[in-house]
Length: 229
Image 1 (cartoon, one colour):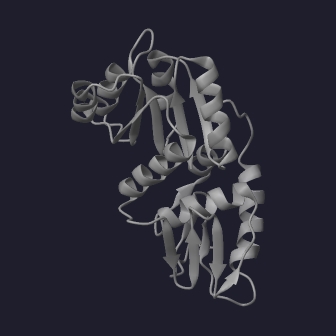
Image 2 (cartoon, helix red, strand yellow):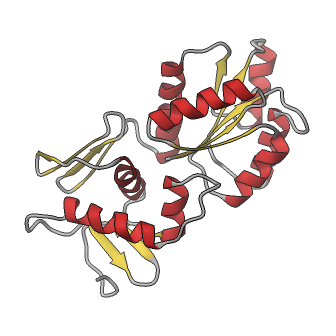
């Protein structure tokens, strides 16, 4: 899952980015609203952590721009301003949640999980397909009752596939989820991760759940397709 942190206080920005990366999120950080616009136009994010008071373009202005551009990524405001009118303004502009500084990082992580659940229409962060069970909060994977151990990037890919089961995900979409904005790799890396992931998920003669769509990408579903490998 990929998060954009927009916070002009550099120490706070770095601390939030470090905390999210430790929780196995893919994270980009920037320091003002105008810079954030470039990030949002260049990549797809699952959530934005957004400070209100920033130079060049403040959080309210950035959020309003996002919504007018049709960018519906969930937004969590961070602010030292705790007046009700400020919170109402942010929510009316399209924010999903509000967290007052100073805050506890465990609460921040919980609120990120809550707003991403809301976007995906799930009341919990447990996803299933046939006998595959993925618990995003605990970061566990079970197939037919047997635990499968995944590397962090393998888990991130599987999480994105199961959140979008039935939808074909391209190499570029998956790259966006596991590497940050500055990464300059190539799609062959994704092929390697997918190969290892398929061996772990679709092993021991079990029905195939991860399907390759030639020239396009991959999809997690139960039914086969003539285009699949």
